[in-house]
Length: 487
Image (cartoon, rainbow, N blue to C red; front, side, top):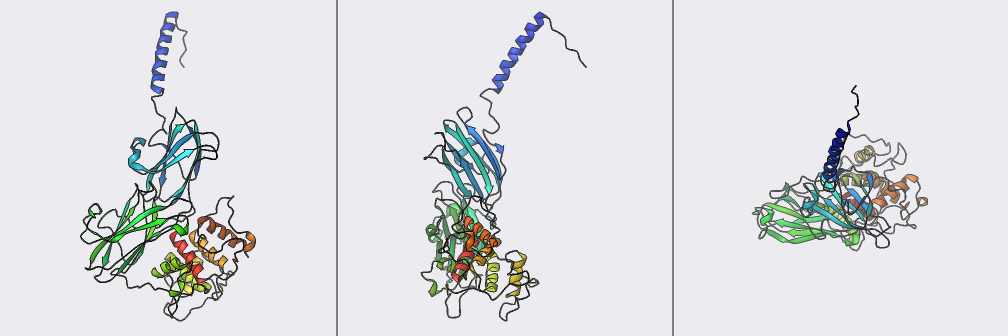
């Protein structure tokens, strides 16, 4: 153990001089010129489900957070500057690849104004489906006064989207008679390209169907293009685009949503290219979609049309599900949207909607479900068995399914909610109906989840006077399945 020795007077002065010089050098190194770790990329790590409260001001104008996001897994951003004061700032979401906030123009996917105080408060509150997996960055920037804010990023209750293989240019992802799910965004992934074999003289129908956002209040757009077989790349698309440009619009309101559609009859057979492009207006919003291709060379299915769905509020859902081969009509060519659906019929409909595998080896736990003669050897026993195994149905009892009973609205909603794996909404959420309208508390809880997730937005009349115990109509079933498919 060393001993401390009292220094002499002269050595004390020298020591003090050295100490003073050291302090000057220390403060020069650690003063305003030194940036904190969270002032720029790589930022401070932020885990999903975390809430942080911080302040930015003239002395510390920037906070940067890094978070890892998975393609197709929707997250909700909220940044609230509070209702007190007059401070202002901005919220920026930077996509993977950004190296510094100085390069914000190249990587800034979303910009929001932050304004504290009431009634002019402005805050961040939006959903985002990453088109690419990777590290994203949130940059909160000060503009005036001392801006205190609360930031949170969490997964929404939407199930992860099963995205098609991504291709940003010709030759594209191979397509065909199928339904593809994808996301395009202004900066993270502005282009998706698919290739499809078309036959001379055979009309193809392409539909770009927006996947409904839960909370976003602004309309966003994407464009659908069909390019000829000679297209070298999307950068040289001029002169190769066919059948005009189709625009799809996504909005929280069903009435504002628009499907982009192209119909084209090729004059030559060959490989054509479908190009989906994110719009830069409004700046920095992504567009989740489903692409329907009908009429390609490997497509033998001709979607039916139903004269009796014209004017029905569920016409779009009925038509889209029929085009996908999920629902069909009656021998007389009608769909009968106001007719009822028996429970075993709906079991098959939801299995086809989710594209669940049916092998024929499944065993149903319900003794009252028996085979029905027809073209489909799996109907209804195997479809019901798949629903039971997947947790979509619990039956009316542990051993009974009631296959020929009409499916009620509350049963329909419960099966769809279970199929979607919907999480519970926040504790303070109040749906537009009450628990007393349901025969079982489980049905109410599932309806509450579905309402919060937006799955009931298109059902007509949902509210305090809605009869959830009544038989669901074919139109209502089609709408709920369509909502499940596109959420």
